[in-house]
Amino acid sequence: MPRVWSGRCKCRSLWLCGSASGRCVCCGPSTRCPHRECPHTGVGPPCTTTAILAYQCPPPCTSTTAVTEPPVEVAVVMEMRPWSWTWIFLTAVLLITPATAICPPNCTCDNDDLQVRCETAELDVLPLTLKAQLQLLIIHKSKIKTLDQNSFFWYKELRHVNLSKNQITTVLGETFKEQKQLGELHLDHNKISNITTATFVGLTNLKVLSLRNNSIERIGSQVFSSLTQLQSLDLSENRIEILEEEALSGLSHLHILHLRKNRLTVIPASNLALVPDLAELSLGANLFTQITSNDFQALRSILVLDISDLNLENGLNSSSFESLSGLRTLKLEHCGLPSVPSESISPLTSLEELYLSHNLMEELPSEAFQGNRQLRALYMSGCPKLTHIQKDCLAPNLDIQKVFITLNPKLTYLAEDAFHFLRSLTTLDLHGNNLQVIPEKAASWRDIKSLHLEDNPIACNCSASWLRTHILESNSSDITGVYCATPSKLSDVPLKDTTLLDLGCGMDPTTYGIVIGVVVFGVVVLVSGVVLAVLYSQHGSCLHRLLKGHRLRGGGSGYDHPCQPDCQGYIMTPHKPVPVTEL
Image (cartoon, rainbow, N blue to C red):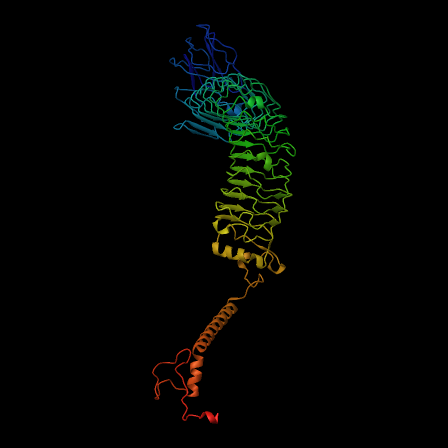
């Protein structure tokens, strides 16, 4: 049992309350300290305060529970509560020297790096026995319910605090008054229902604040006004219905704002105007159903906009995004869109990533994204009504690199030349659709580095022969998972394991060799016949006359010159003139 010193008193029990009437007052785990003062000075802290700081009681002890010792200064302890025995020594500051620190059970304390992590400690109060120079404090999945002015009083060097997944309901004003170095504060997944202008006083250097998944219903005016350096604010998954005027006042450096999954019925345009440098905004899963031209008019610097999980069946028009020409990423998933919103997104000339998954469009039409020539990635998965991908659907988007069209149960048609001229396309994911035929000319398949076609009911006929060859040549694990669905004899057979005979458009290697040999032989015979025919046509008449015994002009039995083409060298010499009268 540790010994605690105060003046001339030394308690053998754990707790020291003070002294009165010349007697030291010591208490154990089964009693509570009464209000006591030092008789010599008449001054002494009450035992029920949060902490009894260093002090001396000079009168000598007469109690049987104490012995006389030289005066030693100490610091003692938090109020003891009968119901907190598990952490009784965590709530006491029993410091033999100012540098002494006690690590709570089931926590990891690194005194060199000034870090404490408690993942399964189940603390019900914030420990006060940690190193005063602590910089990082993480306590997850515990039972802390209240934060007050004394919770962090000793830890003025904190840079990072994470108290997520506790049971915090109340954060009193000026709780963080001394935490001027704190850069990140995570209070998500608690039960906080109210925050005021005093809640975050002192956090002049805070960069990141997360209040996600609490029970906040209203954000009052200038609640965050003291957070002048804040860059990221997460208020998603609360019950927020109202942002009062100037609720975001003072957040001139805010770049990221998450308001997803609340109960907002309108876009808080006037508050968004207070954070003109906002780069990322999440407003999805709220209750508003329309987006007008004025809603985002002040957000000239925004790069990422997430408005997924809204009912926007009739909520978009040609001017909805007209002020967001610099937007790079737009998320419109789960919005009930009946068709690709080509007209609404056409003003987004800098758009690079578009998320349209889980909507109700029936086709991806030709030149669907005519105004979005900078598009680099398209995500269009889980659309229950999508049936067709038309020819040249991405023809205007020559720089597109990634296309994900997956898990669409009714997608049966992929047009020829759907992605054919997209030379920058390196990733094409078409897995989990209902495609039976993959056209050979649908894309420049050899240029695609990552290709996914698995979980499609491929018809293993002659139309799949090119795909079989491509799989065998590429030997890529991304496309080896392509299986035959039809005919029944090939059902569940990997396409790469079939033969051309299996696909009904080829022959086995032996037969193929014989056919090639016959063809070559026939070609040789044909060429030889043609050559002989040509030779005969050029010299045939000369040979004919030679066979008749004709002679060359000039007499004799020899030839002066080879036969001429017109055979003029051959003449007939009669043996005897024939008189005219005999003719």
